[in-house]
Length: 436
Image (tube, rainbow, N blue to C red; front, side):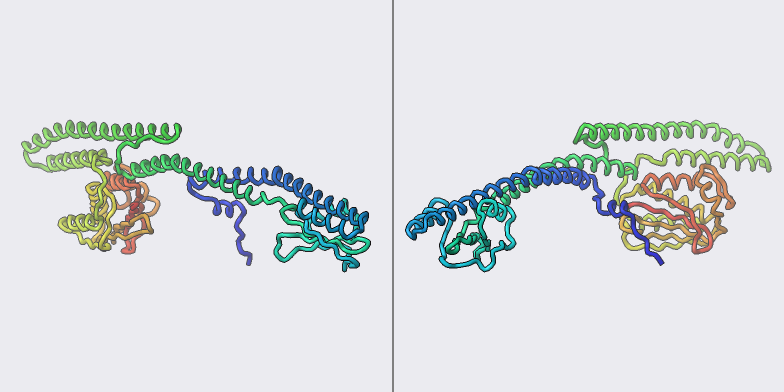
């Protein structure tokens, strides 16, 4: 059995930040780090090597001159004067050990620049050893009549500006990165506000116009979003007013027909014509309710459990057997009247074809609530379920009109979704998911 190995692309995607701010900071930080690394390697790296070679070459030259002078002037007073002068003028501590021999003429592991400079300038056997305190470097040179013991300060061999330079460069980089992150956060905040406003508007929560701020492109997007909101509101208002007028105009001839039928002698034909007039009036009311789908109602914190209890109570008064199972507290922003209309349509559709209806609600994940409407009716084949959401569509269960269409329109206006599934009771289940 072979275990699945994730591709490199998936691993990289998981490591990358998901937010726009994080990715923007990553885009800024990577070039900054690369530029600093290249600058340190090309400029300061080569500069450090040059300075180190010059330091070691100067110390090696001074030791070589002293060793040559020891060969030429063998008098003890002259050698004392040279060692004293080397300490006072060159900061080199020298001590001559007569009749001594280096235990090992080969140089041990040490700085390559210092070894190379001593080999080039000195031309004598030598040995390099570190001191206990680490502030000096001990160089022993083999002379014909003894060993010249030299202790050179480490600061004369190696430059000490590397770590201050790294600290300065790193500190400035962090400072500039912090300033850039602050300004980038301000820019991203405007985009985040636009996203939150768009999501709220899609859920039917009217927060009004948003203030254009940030970069020119972000302000342009915010202005376009405000114009879109106004156009959608104007369209919904015009649709509602137009269909309200159509409904009013159609009710007038329907009223005349109903009065005329009432004045005719009772007969089978008159009864059937009256039923047709009532059906036309019901369709007009459904059409008007569908046109009011978005409506002017604003979303407010609403207890969904209380709404379900009200819908169940209304269905019981109509003679249905309805049970409700909900947790104690399900408060979320809703347009209560619209949600009540959608749930009522679903319960009415269920009770027309079933004897038992069950309402339920529970939290589904961290950001949504699930509402179910179950019945024990004959159910609907899966192939016909989607057609029931179409206006005035009919299925094998015999349902017609706009009930399910209005319900889906209201649920989607809240940013949710409604699905039809098999019910545990044996009939149909309408499952609604609403965002919290």
